[in-house]
Length: 256
Length: 270
Image (cartoon, rainbow over all chains, first blue to last red; front, side, top):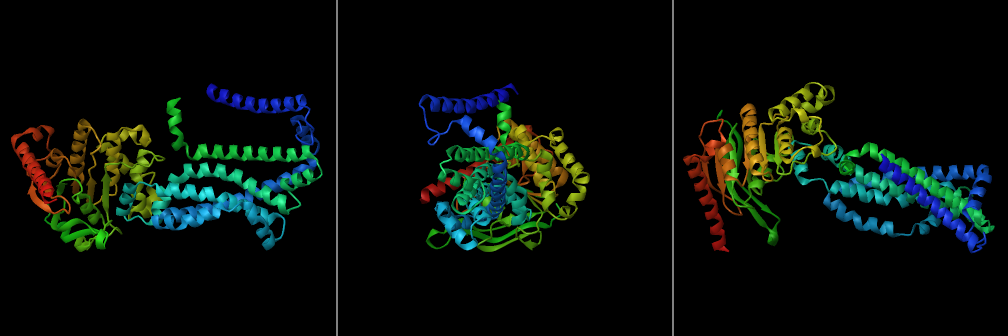
């Protein structure tokens, strides 16, 4: 327990030190708040503008979560298909890689063209940006099922679905949660990207309008909100992960 | 032995791949195994021993000939076959009890009653079976808490829990140390005597074959065929001491010569 406490206090210490050095450097070098505002200024803005920022934050959070949920669903289905056979794996991979290599900034205008500006393109952007790591991880998890175990189950007359349900999917859970943590942060990137380009709501929009008004502290406040949301969701998934896939992290317990 | 045939191979040959890449794995082989027999397949590496197991399990289709299991042509559908490999492949997220119970979740008629009985009758069944191999106290342990020998015991239980008529074992004790292996021979012998499935055991260990089997088939090098097929008549339960008796040693020696001869023959041909 004391080891956990020590780790936590160290990581909080690191964050505080980061802001401290930032603050001190800004004062020492006399940096203008148009270039890089001090953390204290940013937190003041956050505090003062909280009532106006709150709905934007909810907008971004809602959009991200919706895109994330849809992305996870798409990713799990595609991953299950791709991972279910060698042939599907080899066939679909080039297409998926090609798809994931497209800079997502480039697809936002297309979504706007199709669906107009606002929430829909933001949801779609976060969907397309976050589903890929999930596909890869689910597919890999399924593809690494021991062939002997598959033989044992097939000899029992198990269907493909039986094997997927009893062995394949539980086995992918550690991979799946690892990918969720990556995907949730990607989903934020997608949402904000789309909000920046084509929306009049959300943190992305707040930041772009703040920077065009040279309200740099407000733009940074937007960044802080995004970072905070990202950390919070990451922490939530880590917690769920530990509940669901504790069996995969047992080695650490033994080592300690 | 009831005299009925559990497994019939009728000039079964297997070739993997086709055209120029074709690799013959098994020369046309004919072989009958009676119900309740314990047959050991021995032979050099890569001679098609495992292929025979997969044919019987319906995992590989014969290129020529017919495989008949329990009076029907072999297929992976709706058969009550138990299998165990060298790798115990226990699922790390399930307790030993739940791992052993897995076949009941899949095979009929257990499957239909699984939800209703998994905490009662099925649980008792699994515990009784674990008890037979000395693992009753480990029912709620996770696989990583067990030693290799214990995992292999659990693996045998998983292969037998649905009361298969046929048990296929592919070098199940190959990765264990000598003492553990000998303990497991005794465990397997008593399981076999209690449940009387038809067993087909692939092994490299001639002492293992002589101790466990009621019949030993020696296979030639790839593409395999059966060189020798002889019964082992000594009384059961057999003891480890019996594996050091003169007839046992003589039989082991004869089998060894056959296998070495088969390998030398290949070396000369190539």
